[in-house]
Length: 335
Image (cartoon, rainbow, N blue to C red; front, side):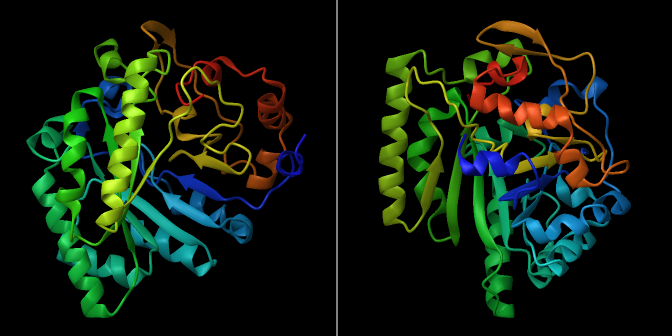
């Protein structure tokens, strides 16, 4: 077992923890579990008390990322969460749909010292607004421009501006226009994700499956070409595609050195394991499966080190070295 893996069975120095500020959302993205499961979704804001239960662990956390299945700026005390994490010496980031960022919030955002703000997109024209219902590309680009202006006025290098881009199969044609859409906006990097969790059968056609080797390699080639073009625009493109036919042994969600805290305070290995729903199903290669939430403790009941050392959690992390993964991970398209 690698030293990194051995150490992570106890209390590691986390690369990051992802904290869901809220599970409420003002958008209705067609591919999001929040939209598909809206009739059984548990909406709530993370309490300040629950977040404070993390403070003693912040010395071992490099990055606190305030984002989950909801829109972070719906949280009434979002800037208090940022201040607590920054005060503890952590880097702080968030991802937003941009719809709530007026001039006042953008000034507060820069003044907060937050390190990274990512804006979610799923297209470069009206297709984005169709896929991400309740959002508008025009508004997102305007918010980015305002953020750049406020940074300049306040003489601040922070926050770095990123794009969290959801690539659906129906949106492949949009990729070539992505660099020109973002050129000159001050965006430093784009992280491209594909649909790894399919909450409804109608979305199955939007995934990219490694088993379809020709299609998958075409995607890889297009992303490689996009990265080269974007580099000339001083824009970094990141994506995580495994080799066709390859099965990963290391989870890209970094379960050995990161974790997710849901708005209810429940700790899980990643955001996909902690949807606030019951009686839900999801789809893997066209097969419907029951969704079973995977959490290992609640911060309102146990401190993070104790949760990390729970035997069930230790056994879960060990499973990535033995290859005996639980069903949720075994069927995950990321693996």
